[in-house]
Structure formats: C-alpha cells, structure tokens
Amino acid sequence: MTDSTQIDTAWTAFDRAAKGASSARIAALFGKEPGRLETMTLAAAGLTLDLSKQSWTLKAFDACLDLARAAGVETARAALFAGEPINASENRAVLHSALRAAEGASFNAVGEPVSATVEAGRVAMRALAEGVRSGRIRGSSGQAIKAILHIGIGGSDLGPRLVWEALKPMRSRINLRFVSNVDGYDIATALEELEPATTLVVIVSKTFTTQETLANAEVARAWLRAALGPVADSHLVAVSAAPKVAEAFGVPRERVFGFWDWVGGRYSVWSAVGLSCAIGLGPECFEAFLAGAAAMDSHFQDAALERNAPVLLALAQIFNRNGLGRPMRAVVPYAQRLRLLPAFLQQLEMESNGKRVDAQGRPLRRATAPAVFGDVGTNGQHAFFQLLHQGTDVIPVEFIAVAKGEGPAGMQDKLLANVLAQAEALMVGRPEAEVRAELEAKGLEEAQIATLAPQRAFPGDRPSSLILLDKLTPETFGALLALYEHKTFVEGVIWGINSFDQWGVELGKSLALRILSELEGGEALPHDPSTAALIERLKQ
Ligand code: F6P
Image 1 (cartoon, rainbow, N blue to C red):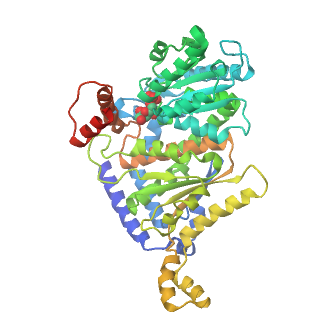
Image 2 (tube, helix red, strand yellow; image 1 turned 180 degrees about the vertical axis):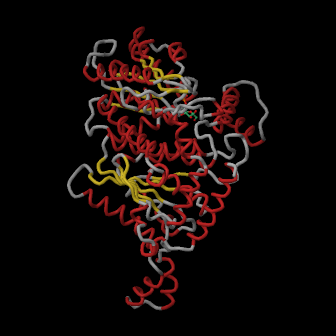
Image 3 (cartoon, rainbow, N blue to C red; image 1 turned 60 degrees about the vertical axis):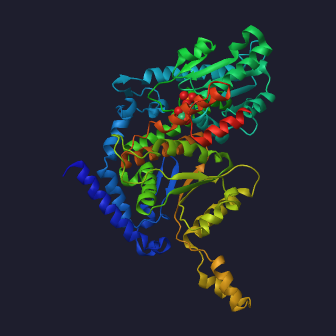
C-alpha cells in the first residue's frame, strides 16, 4: 500500500467511526465504555487534559489515532525536531523548540547548528533585563527606566502581550505598554502615560518592514527625539531577523536583538521577541516560562501518540471538524490572567492552518482550521454561552481552568464551580420532559407549557474539553502555549498543510499600499466600483 492509500483508508475508517459516534450521546458513553475516562484523560508537563466529554466513542478515538499514524505524525514530529525544512514554501526549518531548550542542547536548522547562538542571544537578553531592572542601565539623562513601550503586531505582539498579562506581578515596578494597531489612538494613548526620559521603546518586527509597526515606531522615535534631543535613539531597542534594517532605522547596534528565519512570527515569543516580558517579569521568570515549554516539547517528542497531549487535543479538533462538520471552536479560560489566550490562538491556529491547498499546492478535500473565538469565563457565560447551549450549531468548547487561584478568599471555588457546571450542562442538557414536569408542578396551563418547555429545555450532548493547570506558574503557562503550538502542528500534518507560512495575508497588505498612495493624493488606480467610490468619498 502506498502512503496515500494508507491515508485514504484511515480517513474512510475515521468517517465510518464518526458516523457511528454521531448517534451516541456523550453522557451515555461513560456507562457503555469501560475505561473511557482513563483513556481520554492524561497528564503532561504539569497540565491535565480531560477529553472524555468529547463526542467520540472509544472506537472513534482509536480511528483518530490510526489516522494520525497513517498521516505520518510521528515522522513529521521527528522532522520538526531535526530541523528539516518543513516550511517548504520558504525552505525553512521550524525550530521554536530550540529557543526554549535547556542549556547544552544541540539543535540544527537544515544542518546548521543553532543552539550556541540561541544561548548567546539568551545571555544578551538576560543582561539587558537585569541591567534595566537593577538600575545599572539607565536612560540618557541618568534616570532609571520605569516603562517599556513594546511596539509590534501579530506574532510580534500577541504572544508577549499574553505572557505579560498571564504572569505580571500584581504590582509591577516596570510599566509595560503594548502598541500594535496603526490606528493613531493606540500609540497616542500609550504615550500619554509615559515619560521619554524613563521609557525604553522596544520595536519588535521579524521583517522590520511591517507598516503598522514602522508607523508606530516612527511616532515613538519622534516623541523621544523631541524630548531628549540627539541622545534619544539610545532609548530604542529592536528585535528583528533583519538587524541591519533595524540599525538603519536608528537603533544602536548593541541594542538590536536578532532572531532567525527558522522562527515563525506566531511561534516567536520564546526568542528575544519576549524581551519586554523578560525585562518586566525578570529573566528568572521568563526562563521558567521557557523551561515549562521545554517540558511540553519533551512530552510531545517522547510520548506515544495515544498518551500524547498535543496529539490528542489535535485529534479532538479533527474529529469535531472533519468527523462531525463543526466549523467553530470556543476557547474559554476560567482565569482572568488568560483573557488574551483566545486572541493568541486565533493567530496561532487560523494563520497556521487556515489554508485550502496542501503543501504541494493541491486543493484539499477536507475542511481545515475552524474559526476560533472565546472570552474569559465567567464573562463569556453572560454573553455567547446562550448560543453554545441552545443555538442551532454545535460548537465544541475548550475550557481552561486553574485549580489554585489568587485574590480574595472564597472566589476561586465559585470560579471553578462555574467551569465544571458549564461543561456538565453542555453535555447533560435538560430534557423537555423534565422542564414540562416542573412547569406542571407549578400549575401552568398546557398552552403555556407547550410554549415554554421547548425554550427552557437544553439539548445537551455538546462536547467540551478541559485543560486543568494546578497553578498558573511560568512553567505551566509555558507548557500550555507549547501544547497549543504542537497541537496546531499535528493538525497541519493530518490535513497536509504547511502550517508555517501565511501567504493569505499578503494581498491585503499590497492593496493597502496602493490605496494609501491614492488617499495621500497620488493618481487614481483601477478598482472595483465600490472601492473606487469609497476612496473618492474618503479623499473629500
Ligand atoms: O500578519 C502577517 C504577519 O506577517 C504575521 O505572520 C506576523 O506575525 C506579523 O505580520 C508581524 O510581522 P513582523 O514581525 O515581520 O512585523
């Protein structure tokens, strides 16, 4: 049998198993399937994953694992860690794992050793972070640095922003502000709060060509220069895979931190892209975050597929998407510190796997990345959960919970009670007959009962996963993000996608440049009638 025949056979078995599972109610499966809970629950790198409330039967679970094997997940995983050029359209290795490996690792990117240069980069980051935090490194007028303005967008923003929010001390000596949007309001409000003499501006851009980032960086540089004069550029720091371009912008050479083409933007928070966080959190905390991710890397690399957290999380997604045709997934962290996780995952998953052709350019026959959305629990319960419980679409939910929380006594149990209740309610539902009986007992008329009962019933049988962290520490948080990175990779392998390029963002960028030249008074260019009319209107 050829590989593709093997994959086709595995997909056929998967489809059959999904069809079989679609008639079973999840809640009933616990009684029918001995060992379900144990088989579908596992611990990895300080996290516990419970996938037993997913719609799959044990048979479907096995069919998913067979699909992963047939699709070559194990071989692809080996190629990833070996630094092979698995980002084929750009001929690049994909080595974010090298960035967080313990000292002494020996990763190669397409045969070139990289671990020594990674470690040197980490030493340089540590030196700046410690220098700023201790007051040894000061602003140009001798004042201690009190604030960092982090400028970047996409992968140069979402990861660092999330890390800061997840791990920042309740009272921080460093005021870390993030600016990403090219809407001038964003930088204007950030600068409003800051003093040039005590601020470092950290410009993060892999390419150093991104319009939004350069526009914000220019505003910040002008703000520094207006206040500090010729020494202002010493307040600039850059993180880029194009260090020469950053230097040409005015960033002093010793303040340019490099990274490499084998680090994808959305996988880059482990590199100097996380520099602002290393300064704000302290290098020990940042390095503990890296160590947590490294623990997940080891788990992903070593664990058998059936006990492998990223693999099983990916398979749950594939089962919902391809087996049961569910086009969305909600992610709901019950931890205020993780409120930015859905936004981070939107880029990670949708930019990586939102593709319609395979890595050889052939149209895909299967649906790929679902839309991801979410918000923090319990807030989401009072917003979109109505649809999750009673809407016409079944939307699988991923809950993230933290066993030991922070803050005033008595709140954490309330938070945890809510997450467990939501997962249970989604799965168990509430039959119409039960609602009817309750309304009858209250003495309502039959006509009223007939109207109300269907509205107050819950269909149930709606799947969810739970990822449980014992505590939100730098280590468990690092492991959580690495779990999602590897999950995204496994999905890409099974769908046959190159998860590490993003050609789909290019067209809009180039059209924006054309339209900008017109809005700025340049000659009119050909457009569709709607766009042309809008340009005319905006020029007036
Ligand atoms: O939105 C497209 C994108 O290329 C992302 O992949 C990337 O994370 C972001 O822009 C920012 O790019 P850069 O770090 O080069 O400024």
